[in-house]
Every structure is written in C-alpha cells, then in structure tokens.
Length: 196
Image (cartoon, rainbow, N blue to C red; front, side):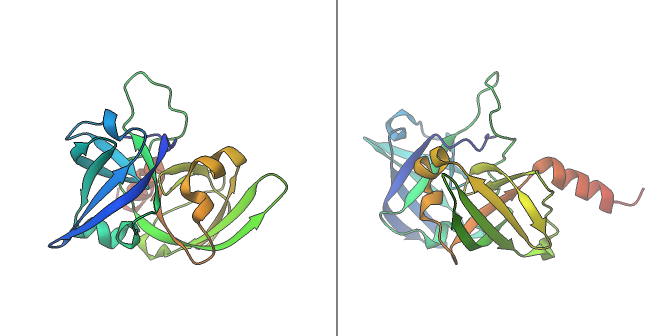
C-alpha cells in the first residue's frame, strides 16, 4: 500500500530481458536502504526488490505487468518515480494507492501556466475505470486531483515542487503514463454493477 507521494527519483541503469520478464536495475538515493523482498512503487507499479547492491536495486516486472504498464518502454537513463510502502501510523498525505496499475493513458496536451502546468490525459474508457471531478488519480505513482473529467479525458494541475521532484517533467504530448484509478471508486462501481 502506498500514498502516491513520491519519495525520490531513481535512474534506470540496466535492463535485462529474462524470458517474458524484464529485470530492471535502478540507481537511487534510497536503494542502499532497501531490503530483498521489500515492495517499492516504480512509476506507480508495486514491484518486489530481488537484489540490493551498493546504490542500486533490482526488480522484476513479469509479462502481465509489462502489458498493462509503461515499464516495458523504459530505457537506460530514464527517471523512475519511487515510493516505499506506507508505514502503519504514518500520515496519509496523498490517497490510498495499491501499486496496481489499471491501464495506461496518453498525454494529449501540456500547458505551461504562470508557475504551474496543466496536463491533459486520454484513456480507454472500455475498461470501466472511473474518474470523478476533483477525485483522486495516480499517474506514474503520483497522487493527483483530476478535474475537467469529460468522457475519456481529464486534466491535472502540477505545482512546481511536483514538477521538479518527479518524472512528470519528462511527460510530453504523446507520452504513455501509468494510471491507477481510485480504489474506493472502483469498489463503488463494482457494487453498482452487481445485481441486488
């Protein structure tokens, strides 16, 4: 379980295809503090640490994860948003994030404003994922508030701190991002579908 508050940025230093899986070696300020078997969010994807060496750690993304996320398109040198799992008793500064990406979305516009940025994203509504006005959405692991939610598009506003301390600064028009929709909304939608 995560909060969507990015702890630090990591950098992809090695990628290794292993049958249908992909091993990712990440260098980051927190890598040396990690332990094998620990869960860490990488661009919003909960992955298990399988190896720690000096200032790097290794995780493995299985084929199913690669199909549903943007991890398969990462290249050596790319920045990755990292967040360690939540501790019981800590403040929940973002929102409840599972680290289970529902689908990817595509950036359709970026507008720089006076001190902030507006990003608009499009997603495939066929998967029955919901976004409500002023509801929570997780983009590449970042907890954000969605607005201008119309049909299959929504916008988010990015403050300078988030822009500078996450990989949202690399997202341009046409870029694919990981989306995790609000877990409470998913349960409510499921309940509404179920016959009484």
